[in-house]
Length: 518
Image (cartoon, rainbow, N blue to C red; front, side, top):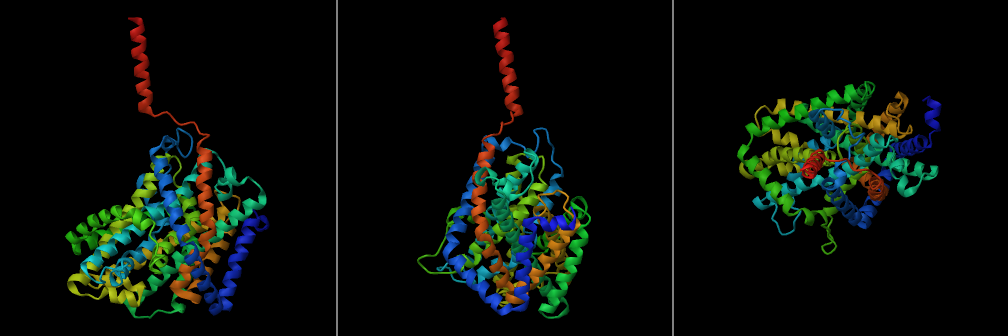
């Protein structure tokens, strides 16, 4: 496609113009921009928090049903299709393009925040019980709920692209419900793109804040927007170079490096940290997560008039919803040839299991340090949440080496996430092209970096969280419509015969013939 043809695409021109306008407003009037965002944040969480919680819970139930039903045997592609990527590479790409950078940020910060100020009113902060509640809630926030949102979007898109040979646009997935009017399709796809950019900007901003904190720990350079702007620029150059190399090279190699380095860091901290405590914390945390899953999933505070659920659970769900068009589309792109059952189990179980293990190792080490060494990590996190991981390293061997490796890990996570996002956004705004033009990638690469910078400049961490929440609200409605659309599509499918059922049928036929002959 030529540049002129790209600009003529209404989804590209509308969504790019909206993001560019937000960038300009945030740069020119940052105070008013921040104030308006804060008011929208309050309006959204107060009035629609229940909607986020209920929607995600419904999606989880739908996916569990699909995995155990006859529809689970349907393949994302022809019945004889084989997976395009090896299992390790598939999981690495899911993890890297998903919430890898967010997990590195919150893996220590979240449990220590809950330990410092407990989510449960009758639990005394900074006690053994507070530590247990903190770990259980952290597991819940990084468990199957977030990944269910990615899974439902990825499942519909993968089904359409590889089974039905259609484009991977959200509007196409909704055609069984909304029809194929051009104005409706343009509106849906524009909403999807804008929500995706805001969700990615949140992750980019979190990673940039953490890199700044790590560099400050190592070199005492301080935390400032000027440093963060320089980090944004370096990351922008890196992910644009990676994006130009294509999906099978840049993202594939970086994703394997990401997961490999994450495993090395986890193994080291597991071995030199409180190993038995980590194992016990992991097992107990899983038990608490399963026991309290329904309660946590539907917990609100209408009687206490509290804000904790809005600040944490609702933010997480909105963040996941905001960038589910991107992660879902990317997950679909790398899952060709897998069955619906294999897809759902892979996406909803393995990345959350890795996430919980990461939290148990790093968050568990931080909790043990505060409970037994009085390290003061919770107090430090309360002052500066971005320093959580690096404060934990101060109580371990080779803290400088660990900090350098972690900064590199965050950097590569950001590059792979942004690289994947430029590809998906360019595809979404060029009629679902599987090989989107470089110009579209450059535009979205620039706008992602620009909006992340503006949000950091105008509101810092609060601004990043606000962006996700506001942009996620309209897309939550779209998610529920996707569920309805998926069922309409699946009802028209011929269910593949299970090989074991076929062999059983053949044996029965043979026995019947032998009986007749005798």
